[in-house]
Structure formats: C-alpha cells, structure tokens
Length: 377
Image (cartoon, rainbow, N blue to C red; front, side):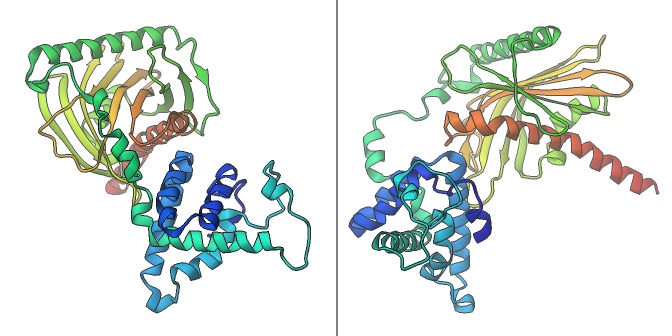
C-alpha cells in the first residue's frame, strides 16, 4: 500500500491541496480542524475523494484489531503519511513552492520539514479516527442550503406520478421519439461523435448536447457472437447474469407488451452508497431487419423502497444491430447522473465505466456458453 501511493504521479490528496491539508493541522485550532478538513475533501476530484474514503475505512478496520496488531491511528499514520502526502520526495516535478524549494540534503531536516511531517502524521491519524464523519457536508453548509430543493430535477410535471395517464403518455412519447432519433443517427453512422481512447473490445465516443445540461452523452459499442433477440433478452430479463453488484431488481409495473417500469439497485464498494435506478423502459424489434432498440428514462415511483442514493437516468438506450450469422453490434448510449459527482468526473471517467458495463454483458455470454459446454460434457 505504501509503495502504491508513494509511486503515484501526484499525491492522493493532489498537488494543489496537499499543502492546504497540512496547513489545517499546522495552524488551525483543534476544534476547527474537522469542518476545515470536511471542506477541503469536497474540493478533491471525485476519484481521489472516493479512493481516500475507501482507504480510511480500511485503516479504521485495521485499527479495530489494535489488540492483535498494535496499530493505533497514530502508528498507522507514522508509517503511511509520508507516502500519502509525498513528503520529502524529489522524484516528481512541481510548481508549488513547498516542493520546488526543497534542497537535496542528507543532513539534518530543517524546522519546516519537521513541522510538515508532524502535521501529516497528526492529520492522517485524525482522519482515520474521524472517517465516519469526515465525508459529511459541513453543518454550516447544510444550514445555508436548507432553502434549496436538491431534488428539483427529479420532480415530474404531475403530482399524481405513475397514476396519471397524461404524464405516462408524455414520457412514453418522449422515449419513442428518442429511439427514432437513435435509429436516424445509426443510419448516418453517428456523424459528429468524438472518439476517445478506447479500451480493448469496446469503442468509446461522446458528444455534447445543446440543452444546458452539463453532462455529455456517451456511446460505447462492442461486437457479440449472439443474435439481437438473445441480447435483448439478456438486457431485459437476465440482469443478474451480467451485473455481479446487483442487489435487487424488480419489474414494478407492466404497461403493455413492450413497456414497463423497472427498479434495480447496484451496490458499491464499502463505504460508498448503493445506487437506485427506477426507469420507464420501452423496446422494439424490427421484424424485417432484426434490429432491436431499448430505451429508458427516470421515473419517480413513490412506492419503490430505496436502498441507496437515487440516480437520475436522463437517457439510456441500447441499439442492437445484426450482422453476419448470429452476430450483433451492441451500442449503449447514455447520460446518467449517479449523484454526488462533478461534471469533471463524468468527462474523465464515466465513458470508461460505461464501456466496462458493456463488456460485462459481452463476457456474461462467454460464461454462459462455457457452463453449457461443461454440462454437455
């Protein structure tokens, strides 16, 4: 663990914020350190913040066994703080005065070095001890935001929700139009989409949508040795075969043969919360070409029991195009706000998460085929 974090290109707490974390434990009174660290953590990039939270909870579990391993928060911090803060490192380049002014010296450390090492050790020990409250929004921030409606974009136009026929048809028509637009873009070979560095067996592209929403629209594609009907069945009825983190899934209501309301929950690595998804989804199959499409969008089903954070599926579409004998190209086009993450995270990470999800579907068929061969043998 020490070597991994020591060898990262920049500290887990980032080059920009490392000094701020040190200053909190160097200069602030003890009673002000927790809210200050809570605020500093909110400034971290999402991926750094989530990694830090996972790491601190792991350290908490280590400390829980102190009678066996003698590892108190302070003892752990003495071992790991230099690696997490990149103290005394001369390997990487930096524009910050704290690093650039360090001298190549093998002699006695100066007072500044000693002060920073002490602050890093005390700071990490404090963060381990306070990890359960460290990632909460500071109380004064909550008080300032009490007058705001944080769920405003989740509200439908009709108070009756799923019981209102007019609302239901409005959402369904919007979904049908989005699928028609998808088919049109497919005919035009998705012109205007911007390619990203792709992962093995998956293509990743995106485009910006001019609707004042900050999230990009992502498209990931892969090829499978399965027919469109088999893939559509896997997407609709065999979620558990390709999503190992699926905690719960249920069709809440069937509207017609090709329309339903579906709820599912995906777990996250502890201590991060699970995500709940409740969607109205429709699907269509072209009897002449064999092409299949599946579209989904968020609906507010008040009778659903949530197990985690309610995500907002702005758009989720699957396009399954046949080619060759029993082969298909599967594309997933989506904008999903998983909540608690910034647009920067979506720009850097979300497309690759979508590709990983698509490859889970692809690999689930390989696992099923392997089990079938073993059964026959």
